[in-house]
Length: 193
Image 1: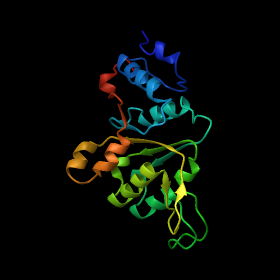
Image 2: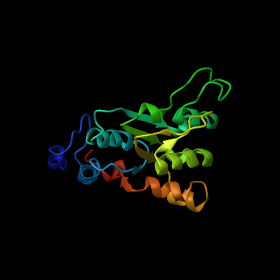
Image 3: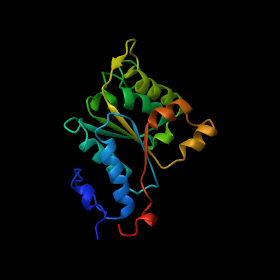
Image 4: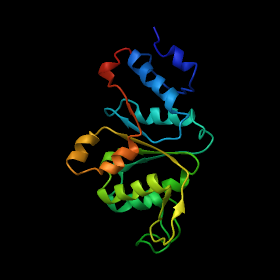
């Protein structure tokens, strides 16, 4: 029995494997949130399909014909995260010999997935907050802001509320990302999958 049958008629679900009632419930939420141009915070254990869920949100949004760009925040050294996110002008740092576009520019008019967002440093969190609040950012070495038209989807397996309480994650950023929270159920909650 496939509990996701009804929602499969509403959404493009390329490559999605699963038929559990728990997954169907999340997909019903996705059907509601995908058309809205708001930030989404995906939570859940590693390996539950948060990145795939982010792609499904993108593919069912008005931004579907534009880029879907993913950045794993945990995989980058602290000193490269800002350059990767926002780009850099020549001379902005020791390896910037030419203009480098960041992931925000690459995702223009599309969707930017910030995977493992809970691993961002407080400094990078402040710059991400600027992007979400003002819809603009400063590439490294720039004196003028660049406008950005991107939808941000953040994913994490960390308890961000606890990180906020422990002053490891900015409360204002948490609320900017937490506009629509979606929790991907664990595989234990989805035995059919």
